[in-house]
Every structure is written in structure tokens, then in C-alpha cells.
Length: 65
Image (cartoon, rainbow, N blue to C red; front, side, top):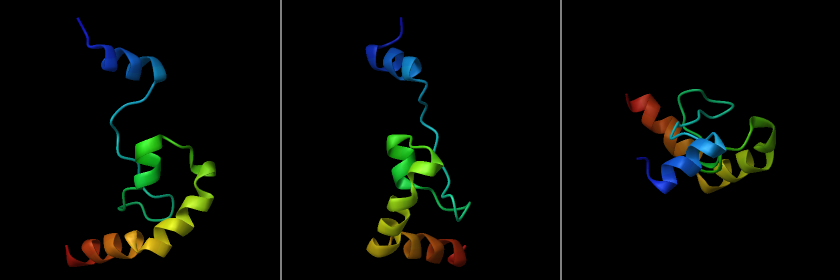
């Protein structure tokens, strides 16, 4: 029998998928991944990722690889 949390997640239609950034495919979007937002709801959050430096850090990691 499945656990309660698993049943709730299935009912909500959410999985553990990591969603890519709308602008940079190789960067994982932390906001969309955590809260399962649709891309059209991300516009204000994209600015936050840039301001806190998350986007620059992830792009630098990709360049090192």
C-alpha cells in the first residue's frame, strides 16, 4: 500500500521532476521545481534569481564542465 504522501502527490499530479530554467535549458529553476509553477507565472521570479546571483553561479558551473 502506498504512503499517504505518495497518494497526495499523485492526486495533485506532481512528481519529483526538476524543471529547467525558461531562459537557460541546462540550469534548473529552483522556483518552478519547488512550487511547480507554470512558466508564465515565473516572470517576477526570474529577476530574483538574477539578483541573488543564483543564475550567475549556475552558468559558471556549466562553463567549468
